[in-house]
Image (cartoon, rainbow, N blue to C red; front, side):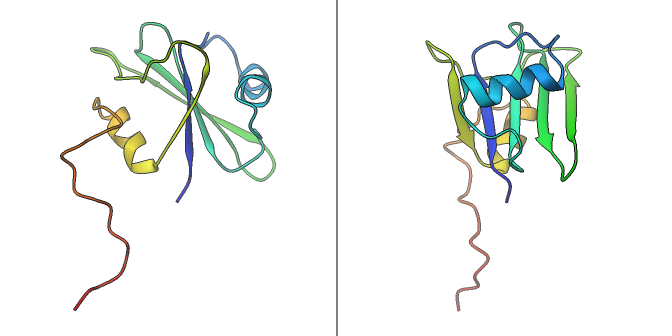
Length: 112
């Protein structure tokens, strides 16, 4: 399971790979060359960019909503929030990263 890190607050999404990698290393103080996903959102919360390292280069994934906005978590200062892939899928589907009524994740064990 891959770890996802959200850059809290608004990010200028005109930045490309180098600018986002600098934010990851200097602002979030994480390693952009890890296999983690680093997600950024704009001020209007209708755009998300995801930066991920893939063995010998970076990928940028980009999603723009035509209607509505993402329920991007807020905080008073810049920082990161680490969430699971499951929570990230909720966010991309328009829900909050904290679904209190969701079933717990399966552990992969069968209980008899």
